[in-house]
Image 1 (cartoon, one colour):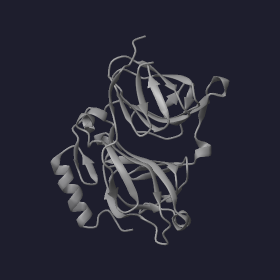
Image 2 (tube, rainbow, N blue to C red):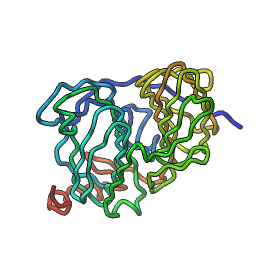
Image 3 (tube, rainbow, N blue to C red):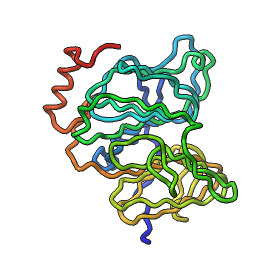
Length: 290
């Protein structure tokens, strides 16, 4: 079987704040090689690397804002996030939990540090992905999937060397619980030191790794440490990871959606006219209220 090789490894760029509660490095699409089309269906990745937030009575975060045309996937590694939207979705995303929100035709939401966690402060670490929707799904009603860590299926590696949390897609017959609109795989690979694991994805799938914690080698060659993003080539199917320290790796691979991508602000559509319409609908109150 042909090996899927590393195309490039990226160190985190300078962080910036989204609102006052999320200090993020943007990998997709800020890095030129990681355009929305190159990583489609993963069209944005904001990574809040480990950051200590001082205690605050008033929870930090991002106020009410709209989305249309895609999904937000939020994975909490440290800290707690609270979410509310005008479709009735919401709740607390605790450590290890995942929130999968389909904006569809339009949603208003806000996200902020959970109230009690905010009062104590602490180390905070999270990832937010934007996952594109095909044009036929962009006008569907919004939807909310709250995935607790205990409910995420796991594939356990031999010799107690680690586990693969399957959020979406499949790994070695273990199926994730997240419902997706196009074929994609999303895992947390939690590997103990010296553990080895292989992955196999179709050649045409856009595939990448984010090293959340630790130090790994890919295909016994390229090395990537914590907070680095690894872009895999679109040739070959199988690649191997070996952990040289206890490691957590976010693995993402998805079938591209072969449609135009037009993005502006909180909207991702297929044409400029659809973007204009989204802004008009938002300003005229068609997104509702929160």
